[in-house]
Length: 180
Image 1 (cartoon, one colour):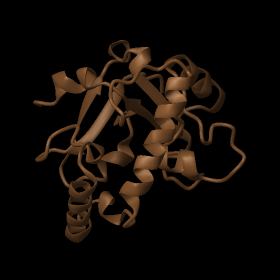
Image 2 (image 1 turned 135 degrees about the vertical axis):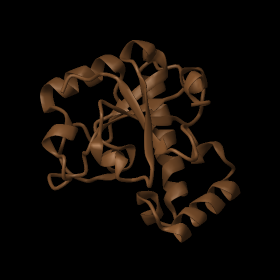
Image 3 (image 1 turned 180 degrees about the vertical axis):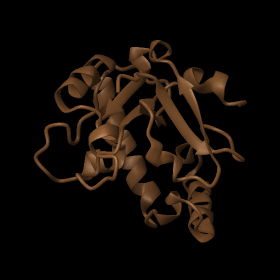
């Protein structure tokens, strides 16, 4: 796999880039409760303190990214994967996705984690890519060293890494795709 494009998967009827982090704490909790009650997709399995944990992890990612020279214009990211991930399609009743080319991802506005932000920042083992946020240049080195999780861990039985996550920290990057 050498697909360096970014992919955003979403429920087709709702559209792309609907971000819980953009909501107030109260509104985000209402939406997550509705998702849990309906219980039709992967997100319905999230814990009751999901948003609290998510906001803490997003703040850590923000701080690491800015320490490495990133210039986020948002205080929270929009989430994508680097390369395709068939598994993510199973999260949705009617999945759809958007592709943003690598060259359209400005280095100062995107960060990466080797795996989803949640397990990457929370999983306790000795893998060197845990609790790390990477720049555009750095993620290429990590892929060279460890490969693509989408290939070596397709079933998720070798750890929590299922894909490389892209954190998009600028609305201008996703804006052309929001009306799709």
